[in-house]
Length: 195
Image (tube, rainbow, N blue to C red; front, side, top):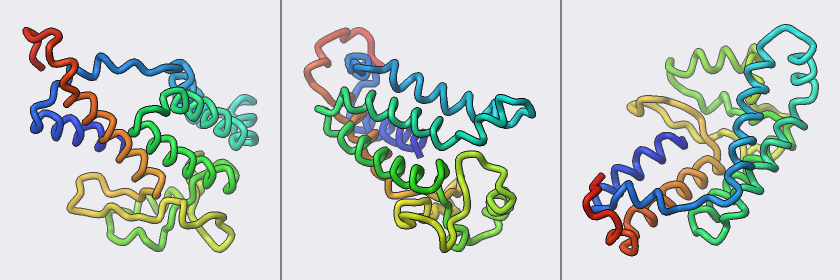
């Protein structure tokens, strides 16, 4: 959803006569926290696919590793909380974090909501427990309504399941980009550079 939110916001921003170059004026404080959060997530997922002692360690302690990644992410977002968009992103991230922590480090996915042949492969992977980050929701799932229970089906190009937290994060990204693209204060800078 993040990629879609970014793309849609940029398109809408341009239609509203906003400027992409204005985004360069937005300085994210604590960007290192956000960067290392993504590095920890990506590295742990890639290493966990290997067959060595490190992958075993990651699989056995993934809830703590993912918890650390989320804490770093929340710190990075929190340092920019004065922005309305960041407030909404923070709220969405908190909801996802709570759901994941209460479900052993994995985001539950509601298989019963995955209707359509385009979901068959995702269902198979979930049932075989091949995903480090997600699991299928069942009667033992905690905080079910915060998990991935909202289907985005065809004709959408990339059918998927999303959570309430995902929606808030996407909305926050959209609002943040709109604010900075349309911000008139920066339109007097670099008028010769139109993007």
